[in-house]
Image 1 (spheres, helix red, strand yellow):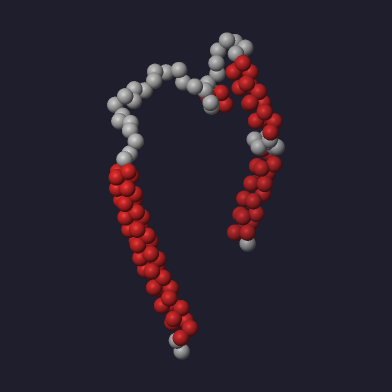
Image 2 (image 1 turned 135 degrees about the vertical axis):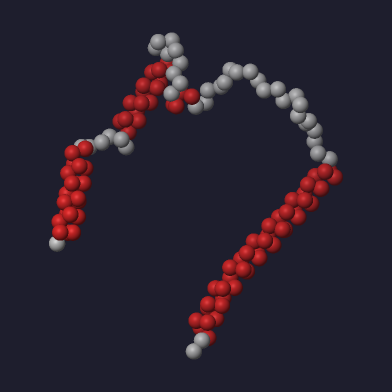
Length: 122
């Protein structure tokens, strides 16, 4: 009886706390629109500065220094190089396929044994 009173008191306290918090507009479109309006107003530069909020950073180009990529070797692969890469990739894929098949068989053996025991035991 005491245990039931404690549970009902705890549930009543949670219910009262939920009611006292009131309606929240955390998931309404009004709060999202107001934040977007503030960000767009800041991006328009009413005070002459650019905002760095999350909404204004997306899609902006960086004006920093360009990265030097001159050390990279750029050329087309020859037919022999492409055939060599394809051969290695095919070997890797075949090994992965064999490994997946082996794991599948390994996991299937106990299940097949249990089915055998379930259907053919006395």
